[in-house]
Each structure stands twice: as C-alpha cells, then as structure tokens.
Length: 197
Image (cartoon, rainbow, N blue to C red; front, side):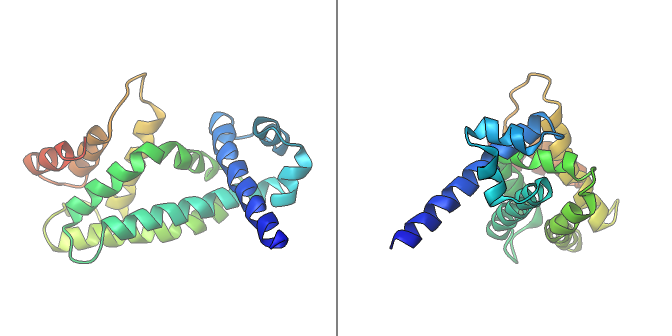
C-alpha cells in the first residue's frame, strides 16, 4: 500500500513538473532544468529524478501532447461524422489548451525537432485522414492535397495563438478561420463556428 501511495505521489509530481515546464518553456524555449525546478518550487534533483535530461523532459511533453490531442480527435472525429463538424469541434475543444501545445511548435524547430516531429506524426496522420475523408465527401476543398491542407489549417491555430495582439479570441474565430482555409463554404463555416462560442 505504501509503494502504491509513493507511486501515485510520484506520478502527481511528474505531471506537475510537466505543467510547469510547459509554462517555463513557453516563455523561454531555451530554459534549463534549473529554471523548471525553481518555477515548480523543487530542487533540481527532483526534476532530474523524473526526467534524467532536458531532452527527456521535452519528449515527455511531446508524448503527453500527442496523447491528449489524439484523445480529443478520436472523440470529435469518429468514422461517419461529417469532417467539417469534426474539425470544428476538434479545434474548439483544443483552443483553451493551445498554450500547452504551442511550445512544441517552437521546440520542434530545435535540436529535438526530428524526435518531436516523429512523435507528433500520429496526430499529423490522423488530421490528414480527416481532411481526406472530408475531401472525398465534398465537405472540404481539394485545392491542396489532404496532408498539406490539414497541416496548413492546423498550423494556423498556432499562428493565431502566437499573435493574439492582446485580443481575447474565442474558439469560434479560430474555428471559422481554419474551416475557411479547409475550403468549407462561408455560410456553412459561419454556422459551424457560431455553435462553438
């Protein structure tokens, strides 16, 4: 029983460290383990006990993001559901959490880029499948290949998150923007976005 309690407590600490790391790395992508420890109010040894290196910490963040994003996508985009509706719900559900994932976009450009890219490949593939499904059903445009179109619309979410210019955008603006990028007719995009305010 004591071992189970220690394991649960360790898991809570690990998740709290990941939450803090997202914040710290979001402000400074080059931040080190000491900065994460200080922000979490623990000693560096505690951080290293859960993540032997900064690379392990960053890759743990990427794995957690993939798990969370894939879970939302599987709920919002089951087979048979119209792709435009599925995309709208997916973006609306993730928008409040976008800061968690935005840091990975920055870190993906760094030394761990290939590893992060490989981990996020599962999400990229699922989004490409969703867009392709929408193209085949004439719900989404065919102006770009499914993989490119999905990546462009998904990247727009992070572009908007990076430059809110002080505006407090709600999910509907992001949903509308990405649906239009995906080739959804304006009236349909407006209706789908309006339901997700």
